[in-house]
Length: 157
Image 1 (cartoon, rainbow, N blue to C red):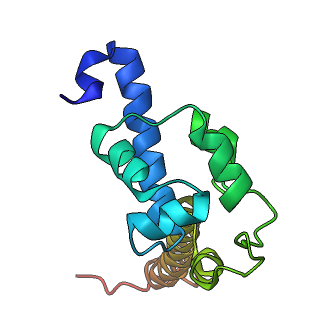
Image 2: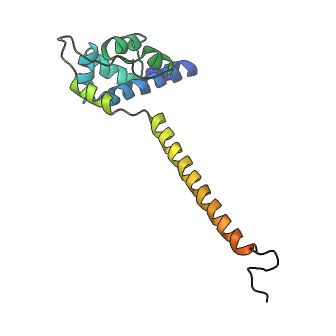
Image 3: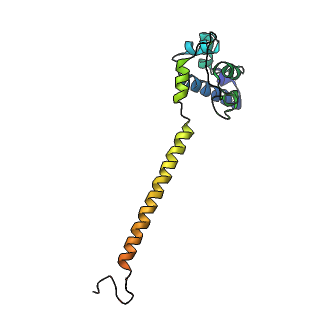
């Protein structure tokens, strides 16, 4: 039976949110499978598989992710702050770098950054449109308004 079904609603929601963040960590850091992720954090593959299938994320997971992968415990436990800590040199027990993790982080873009860039582009487009319309408005006014107060630019009908 799924352990989430046996929890009170609030506790089940928090556990579900942590599971979602755990899956995000696995994906964003470029782990190819559960076994690779389990090895990186020092857990057995079967235990990681059990966590992912049951949805019950142990309380110690946040600290383990911070210690082993430099994932912010505050982000993992509370969804507060940035996902990654500032120091992002990821090495295993043999002091070998994890190239996939480092490569993945180098190319990681926070979705908020993409939205901000998109909004800035929209604002710039709107500014350009306002400038064009203002110039067109001036041009049209010049056609309508008489240059000589005694004469009209518009032919009398």
